Figure: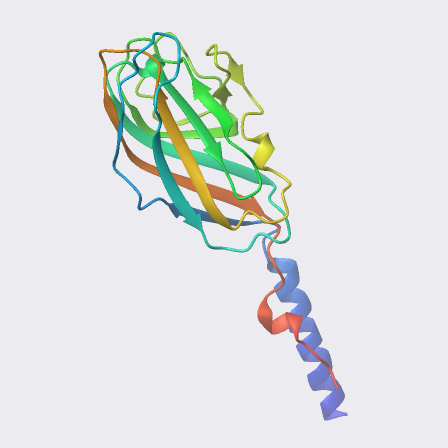
Length: 196
């Protein structure tokens, strides 16, 4: 009888732990491959040689990704010169943000998220906050990060490219990070749980 009560108690504790667990897990990783100088553009309107920075996302995402967000900080004296593109272990280089900000300066902890606000591309710098991405014409794109959602495994090297499309202004990528959200794996203790 005592063994039955203990078994029921263990099952109840396990059930309560599962019920209390969050529906999603979120992991953020910052790049250590900064700062990176952004080469000056040479031909107006044509993105030049990119500043390339990598980040190693070393957490398994075998249960899939439901939301991906990226953030960056950049010093630059003409925001709309810049083009930002991201690639993951399973998704090729994808344009996230370009031709936005006019002659305003800098990006200060800018977060690109499909749940963000539409950016003000005529006078938005330093873009401190959470914004949707844009297309190459500076038009808000509320699905700029969607390509990175749903992939089963995104563990590995991610790359952020920053390009300048005009001469005369230069800058530096000073920081960037990645946040992935998805269903958590079962806790290790419960994966091997047996009632005898």
